[in-house]
Image (cartoon, rainbow, N blue to C red):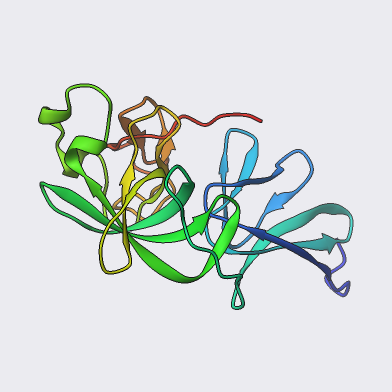
Length: 199
């Protein structure tokens, strides 16, 4: 590869959300703002999809942070993507980033109570074994709370943690519905993992 060659970037108008599949490693190299699971490339943030053409090799797929986002208000039953901010024994506090595939103009607070984490054995849920601050989760809006907050539920297989980093700072890989593993250290951490559904 000739280092004198420059790269050509192509901006795409498509806004993507964390945990959304945006391409395949068979066609692209995963760049900033993305992570890989199996052969799929996922967005790790709210932003615009960008393809950078590379001479003599596969183009790089990046996600560039979005600044101007459309305004939308979540409704009961909407699927949202949120970032975990705080975890305590009774609830998890999140910032809602996206409603469906639409990024919010400003983050809204989402509250996930321990009895809304899963369908069974709701009285034995340990929140610290389900979510950690910094996790990106997929959930459903259960009801409208107060002061611009929304009650969320992850009580379906497809809801839960989409993206999480280990203590070592690596993107973890799900190995079961309740465990994720650090690819660097091989350490396992408990999470309420979202089942990845292929469209």
